Image 1 (cartoon, rainbow, N blue to C red):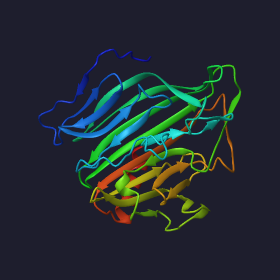
Image 2: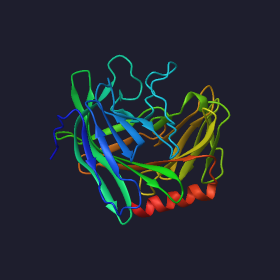
Image 3: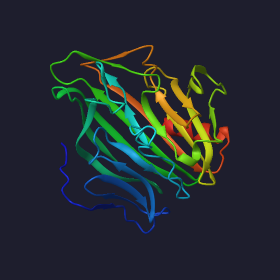
Image 4: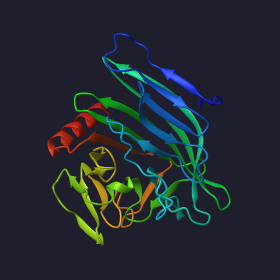
Length: 306
């Protein structure tokens, strides 16, 4: 059952004086949800006052650096960390005339959980994917967002699960789109130059055009200077996702971009009425440059916990 939210500011506080970490809490206003650990913000998720899709607007390293950029002038539809594809020919990625719209319906299961001496916080969001031509419902999504701090490795770990279901009265819907459609991330402007991509298989991948490449691997990471301070961001794809290993889209010019894709430009994917499509990803953020071995270890821990 969805829980209607009417309060302008709402706190969910985990209180335990014996708890080793600072307590996590969720802060909510009319347009966004944020998770904080003590006084430090971990993320800010925008769900209202957005024309076409909810998205992760800010994601912070343990040192307090936000690595995401929202709606840059060159691509206004690049909303920081966002998930979008085309559905039965309706484009939910580019925000052109009469595109598709991901309509926030409500939140369910807003929570802060403790497991031993660790905690995580997050929510489930219900989203309707609408064709604005005729207001037709194409898909229903359950989106689960969770975040935690990994103190031993000094990392912020964000988990993103999307479950797409065909609405009643339809047998299937077809996902398709460009080679970069999926869970995409636009970085800070200062991170657009001088950065380096690496992945679990040490391959440069297939050239699509210019610096754009597609590489299949368990994970892909990017290291760059964020306003003069080095940061590393890794994206993980779960082994149970369809078309695993993930097809990672990367580009370095004229700006840096990273996306977890499903190879939809070559292989459209049908979502059938009796089997929702479940996709699980994660994003880890560190201050500084991180060795491949550490990224791989955090990836394996994340998979084991799912």
